[in-house]
Length: 124
Length: 88
Image (tube, rainbow over all chains, first blue to last red; front, side, top):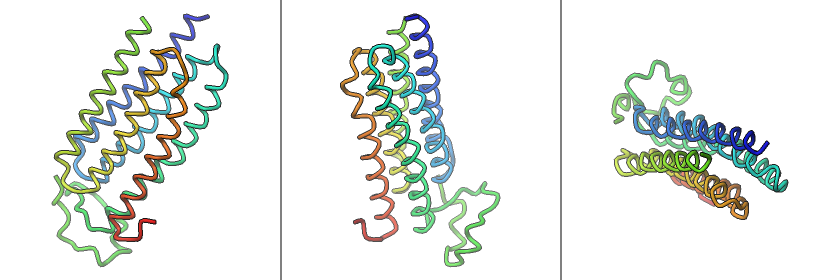
């Protein structure tokens, strides 16, 4: 039983750590701010949720209070990270940060004609 | 065996933190740095989880959800500042 719990916890934590590394690679490799937000907001959130789940599984037979604290942490993580990423993306778009030249379609620009045209391709 | 898995997870967190610091140093503008700081706070939460498992005690586990809320407040403040709005 103890071996089974350790096996489940290690599989979940290893998957979470792998997703976190994927998020970091996306943070370095992707071309502009909005693509990087995509990497952080999805892979990072799922990775930390899986790591919290692994910790909860490990402590579950000995300490039940970890379950409620872990559920609280997962709830807040799912509540706050997409909101923070959305706020940052909106702020970055409204303050005229450049987007990648490989962007296929920019639907928000039809509603915001004041954004200048020469910002495409200026990103790293 | 389980200790080795925890060490591998800590090494992965370390590598991710180094990637965040690299993006913070070379990031072309403020939004890149804000996103990197967001991921760095997440990495700290993961490190706290792994340290709880290694130490065998759940006393630090409250810091996980508290750090989540503090990281959100930081990101929201930076976003409001970039929009040149009122922060509070």
